[in-house]
Length: 457
Ligand SMILES: O=c1[nH]c(=O)c2nc[nH]c2[nH]1
Image (cartoon, rainbow, N blue to C red; front, side):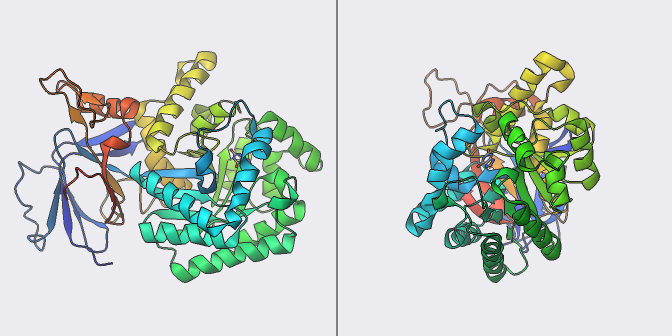
């Protein structure tokens, strides 16, 4: 689809480093017809047209009062198929949650109409929260997984779409019949995505062994070979729950650890995303670092399923690459802004035991949700910040000013700006009290993929 050259005018904010925001209050970012950032100007005075040659007829998009452009969020771990269960988990923990809530729900996806309804909804919803890239788990079903890829492509969300592989320890009605069928079906989804997006420009297949307990040695090894042969990324779960870890010990008695199970299968590489990583030993973290595999931290889910508190500060200090994942529906929210907030609060619970260094700041949580996520999905050269040459994957945030009247405007969000706040304080208010009402518009590769009614481009 042809895009207009567009100039985005107003404050922009992105992460300069793990603990430093770059806040430019007089910004102007030019995005070319290819959806890439062509220039970044930091000293736009007033609201006059940009002087750049060749940009005289470009379209202009302005922020409104207290608004700013921010990079799109990158959700490094989300089960699209579990979206109907967001918020439904009772008092369960991982293994009984899988059997009680999750496998029955995922088995629905043999019905393509149901799948279409749910997948359309979750993609629209995550876009409305400013998620421009998502690493999705689908289900074992090939047609429904392909449909999820089609929906991401047509709605314009950048996505990694994984057909889930699992050939043991789930009900008969919901598992792969054999190693061969798991590989055959995975390949069918890869072929489909190659067909709809040959360069994997927007949608990329991702090899998805559910987790070690639900895959036989043979399936893990075959998926490891596929990972190596295709060069495609891989995603799975690791060390989320203590009973799960015991189960892995029983099922793989000849392996040194959970991490070694994946390593021996050839599934621990720089293109591997490991979700949760709560109870890893220091040897396991060291192996993950050596293999350059990546971590998706899922604090909302880890709390909901009482799985534990991941030591994010330790992982960052040790040089691991960490991003955030909503992990719907272990996680109750599909909002990465809420997930960032959860990461901050969980880190405070860690700090109550281990000391203040564990606390994550607003800046760090936003880094994990953008640049960190970009590294986790291997796209740090293309997304996560506003540099020339990067794709315009961005969101326009609008914050509401408090007027002179005492009455509440029901349509406005919960962020209330009184006008005296510094920019750092405005960002903190957004992180702690914001929601999708503040996400005015969202672009992926320069294409507008979501906007609120009040946004006039
Ligand atoms: O949070 C989780 N969600 C899942 O669907 C799952 N499967 C295995 N392990 C899991 N953990």
